[in-house]
Image (cartoon, rainbow, N blue to C red; front, side):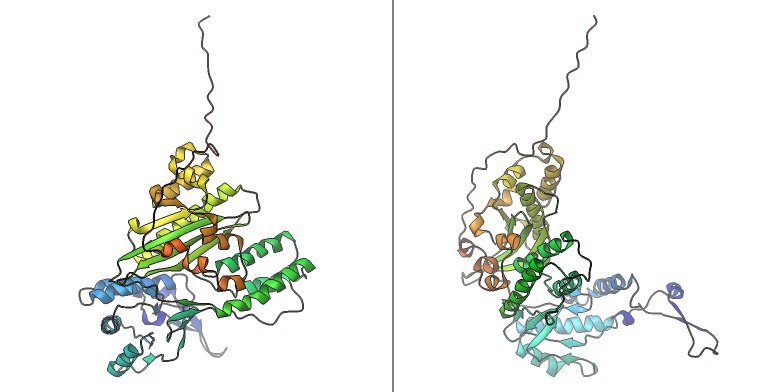
Length: 428
């Protein structure tokens, strides 16, 4: 992709190579006239060029222009349609739009064999490099996608257990847990907490760890094989004919970590209620001790940011986004203006209410909070069958939800103290 984008002629002198094949030969100077791998600006220039191309050609390809601006990640396009006919139309428009800019799409895949056959039979024969991936297993941005059953499969590739367990070895293992959407957060958070323990034991990178830490890591590592059996449906039932689409977010905290979880709730045209996990985020509690209510508020901030991001990506209206926490203290803090609280609380309350109305916050029982497993960690074996994590609480899967507004008791915890000093002035 980079080599298909020319840079401005006046900037080509900034990309020079001095070269000669033999030491006796005179030096030759080459100018690189296209975007070059390894330069700091290259990713931005590539993405910005695609956006500009979409803007320039939107009068000809309006639908493809929107797809180009919203569904590309670097040089990978991921999009869909409600029907095979619309998907094929998108395919033709996207191809033509990109060809106008000098880009050629190299490979296509789809969960619809009918669509792939149409694309293969009617594709432009002049595009010699165009390939159609008919294999069932496909990689999308590092995720394993099975196009036949349209599902994501979790893959974990760990080398054989080393005889010497060191900090370097464990961090290498943890880096192999690729989880961009946080689907495995209840398992990954345990690894994050373990990293914190490694730093506390103050061992060198290649020094063998204490036996208790080795045993903990070995048990955790063996359990990771259970992740291989997890599959997630790619399609979240989003369709133009849906009766209702909502996002419900949940926040929770423990003494070791805090978490935010976003679920999509869809009521289909046939009145089927579907709830699925979209994304999750976790953070480890700092070593400096912080009270649980403060950590619960940090989880609420994390959730607010996550919901705002997911809402914008899925184009869900604000009024269809709801947030839940099991902390009555946090709900009480959100009921009062930020200026009432100490700086730590006030700043976070201010950020939350700027992004989300406090009327959208509700109370949920701890036993019905999907963020609970991610805040304290569970095993991979438990995660496989944890309905609360994958599909939210049972009441969320009912057609009608009663948003009961409980009486939230006021709190003086973390209230800002106003020190007043009296000054007496006398003429005597």
